[in-house]
Length: 219
Length: 305
Image (cartoon, rainbow over all chains, first blue to last red; front, side, top):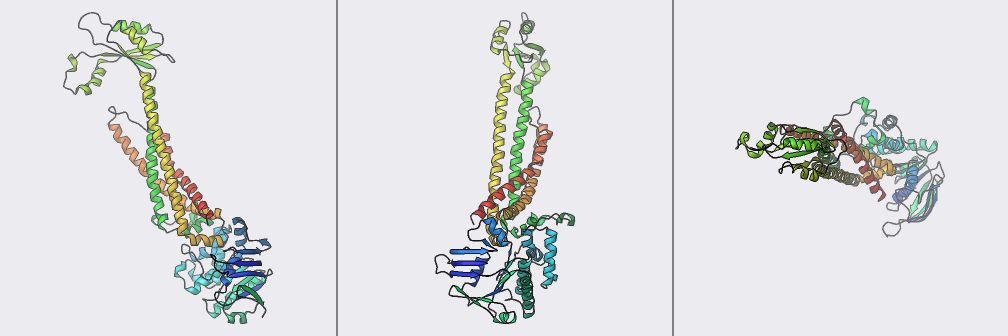
């Protein structure tokens, strides 16, 4: 993943990110830290192609994503697993179909996608809620479901925005162990967090954002 | 309508596709619920218009076949005194090139045709009545009715020649106009239905824009999302079409039955077997129109965002 002199401004306001240059090698694990409002979520949006930079270029998996066609973007997005801070589960689908959705979009057979989703749901401790609607889940359960959905396609890049913010310490440890396992198997992980405790218990290099710029910190 | 349907049996659920599963995320809104009923109404109207076009076309052919290739010669009543010109008229007709069989209309048939006009107030027995000869023409023969009438008047000054071809042409013209109008109405209803389905699809996209945005972020292409919307519309369009056409078929059957009881007073348009087959296939057309309209509308909506 490479960002080259990337700036992002919303509707003529001062830029949230100002000529940010950042390169993360394939297979890296990076925390994204910094005070609230510094632009962590905006940077993640740029990385998972939810926003286009005002200037500069972004390359993912060796391909230039800036200015890519909709079909190219869709192909790149299928290699990214995103854990949204607000979970974004779909109310019209059961839990198992929410988790299976990225596999269905990728063209998997329904039975296969549901079987894999059911295994992941059991793994994140929601095996008894497989047919539940998202509205009936607690915040912590939704967060676990959002993580299961992000990793079901075994993405090359995992982008997570506060993925352990709504779960207890035991579940947080378990989820971090999952991210580390996927990272050991080759996935690049970018994890935004406010939790210093997490950084201490699971040490990895951190990208510290401040005043629109990034500084690399090594533990 | 979706909630009224029983759950699909398990063996049929195995045929679920990724899009049929994901379509659940775009359901449950008011726009989705109204679509089958709107489609049912449009299919009902389209089926009636199409049935009218088919029935009038068929009736026109039947009437034209009945009228075509002949003349009716009207001569005066049997004279009280002097020679009856009927034999002379017969001779003149037989001598006319192109004339085939000549049949005299039986007096009781003439009475039956006249009775409704006279309201049963007059004794038809004693009434001087015109006589009619039904003259068949040889295949391809054309006779100028004005020239023939002038010749026949030398034998009977009251003689008149009525060319069936003229009536057949007028009737065919009238039937064609009715047929065209009904077809245009059916097509217009189809176009309006397609526009309505497209508007509903666009409304559904707007209502579920968060879900659509998420699907895009998970890697769905616009084609995939539009196919998902089209799939949902196919089910609703087909169900609505089946309901509307079913009701229309019942209505058409009842109209035909009522028309049968009035047969003889009014010309009765009828539907042939293949007409019923065309009407029965309309739900498939409604489903196809729904798919195409929803997909185009969804793609247009996605392109704008």
